[in-house]
Length: 81
Image (cartoon, rainbow, N blue to C red; front, side, top):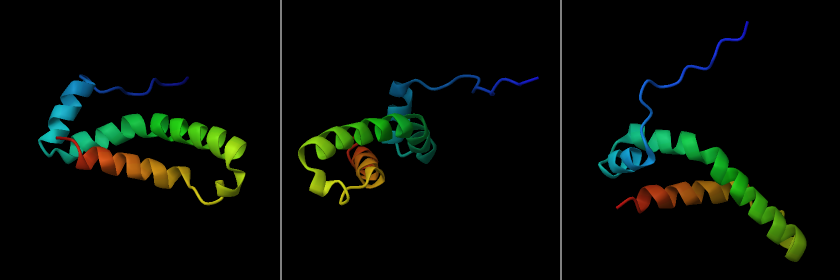
């Protein structure tokens, strides 16, 4: 028998998380990263793969999806206001 994955009793909406993150809540920032990291990583990887492989194959080895995603999230945290 497979047990369902526990879900938070009252998951915060994006607006609530952003409001808390802007207020300095590290828990809200962690939650934003947990929720959106996989989606952002997939989007960045897809964009890099499409652009680099097709138009600039010599740059493919230079760029890391993880580095770019990290920069995206650092920018998010820096520019929350």
